[in-house]
Length: 218
Ligand SMILES: Cc1cc2nc3c(=O)[nH]c(=O)nc-3n(C[C@H](O)[C@H](O)[C@H](O)COP(=O)(O)O)c2cc1C
Image (cartoon, rainbow, N blue to C red; front, side, top):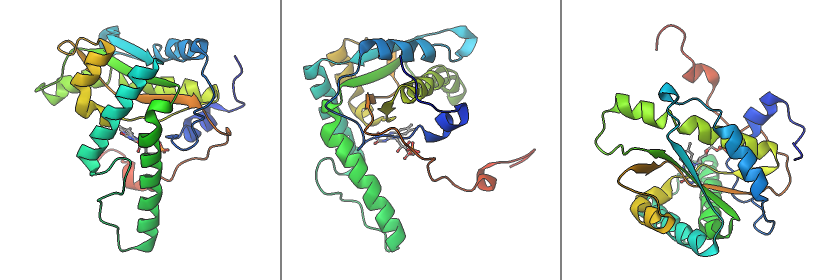
């Protein structure tokens, strides 16, 4: 296993949503995915419950099905998938450029989702439909840190990932394809994983810290 030469802070600040720079032609060794999941399960869970499961999908037909569900989810939420966006273009040219970049990146991933060599579906035991938010926090909080750890571990190994959720609009259908017991298990995300094209990534644009950082009160 070769790790990229990144400090912990560089790793934390350069793990981006990779869409256009996923290498669709290079296979990912199963051993690397195992290592990433092994690190992921060091994340915390409520009462150390560890009700997590990671479905690693490499089968071409299953990836094809997940890609299709993802595109359907994108169409349902944003009104586009592989084609033109129906979203209004902002008047501000800077905002319009930004939106065009995001749309182009999101569409690229949607078009190629099934070609990404590994798709990971992290799951948690239990269902959250109609559950009060305080309990939901405990359940989501017992899977999401592990998923982010997985993504950080992947980046350290030269792999790119992107957190995606749009396939969840077809969660039941995806559960059928993957043999997940839908009544008992919730899917949290769909994470495409591939080697990145180049390994240099920069910190992402974020709101000014003082807009979001609060000391002692809101
Ligand atoms: C909960 C969540 C859901 C997301 N869903 C999607 C998605 O369905 N498709 C997608 O292309 N990106 C998705 N993203 C990625 C975000 O768009 C991305 O993280 C954000 O634009 C910031 O970019 P960065 O991670 O490169 O800094 C999601 C991220 C999160 C945390």
